[in-house]
Image (cartoon, rainbow, N blue to C red; front, side, top):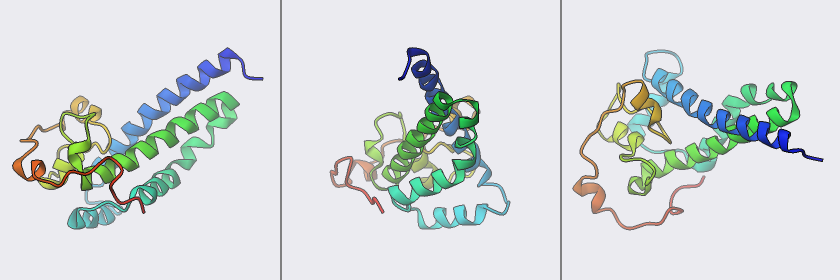
Length: 167
């Protein structure tokens, strides 16, 4: 039987994990722009300027965060479930947002400017590190507003939110 307290705890942990995942994503992306070992794969991503597909992005996000999700079950079942669901939902959202910004950036209605798209378009190595959200760029002073949308984006063929590479 599920009680109200467990649901509240799980919901709180879901929200904290969602926000925490966005913070981790921001800092990992920012670190990928430093000359350290795991930056080479990211530099290749910049050269190609394309996502892997939503499902492959999701796989990579989940693989790299399992070590943060699983231990929360030691605290309690509601904490573990809420935290894991928050992380998984953010990973799904971020995977989708990342691919969307590479293929159809005008559909990123939840941001004033699709930061990851302009990060690539203007070859920004010191600005706009968010993938799915721009909160942390604003907080840490790395948000850089640029002309958006330009004529190039406005003249793209009209596509819906699901017309993108899924795998």
